[in-house]
Image 1: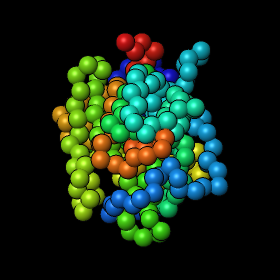
Image 2: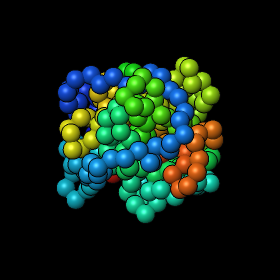
Image 3: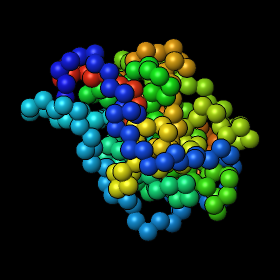
Image 4: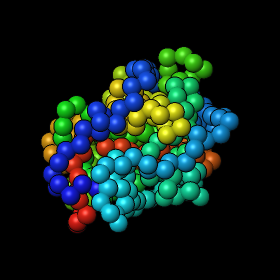
Length: 254
């Protein structure tokens, strides 16, 4: 971890593995199956948080992923992923591409919410996208429409005052602008695609300038309440969050 407090790290540039620009779904529709039931052969590895930045001796290396779960309030039809909680939402995403939803996720349930905290770096307002949120949407039968379960994203620097990104939770024709849980996820430690480069990572990007905030250390995601529900895998399915533009917090995070 760098001791130079205030130094910015453009994760999207420094860590990008440019394997080609991956096109994300620009349409969205709701179908009768839940994302958690989409079959996959196996989960593509557990997050290992292996990305490092000039680690100081004796300190955990900095990485661009959420470090702590501050709170989790599941709603009805939650349950999936709780056997691996909290690790399932910490570290990098386990994206499986355009046509398959990862099972390395935590289902929030109807109206459920989760608050995550960064302890080694903070999100800062830089060029373009500053934060990526990864769910597990997928293209339906290889077509243009995407199975999505929306979440409303808010950010905070102190964990008290929150700034919510506008999220059009019912605008299916427009692709649910401003919501998380819309774009398929490609980044995965197993395939080398960077989770901090919006050009290739997939997931949904958020710019702090949209809410007028210069720095954020907390991210809150709330299930939109109008997704598909049933069983134990209903609602928004969180995989991971990643900092694109960040600043080191050193070893003295309040």
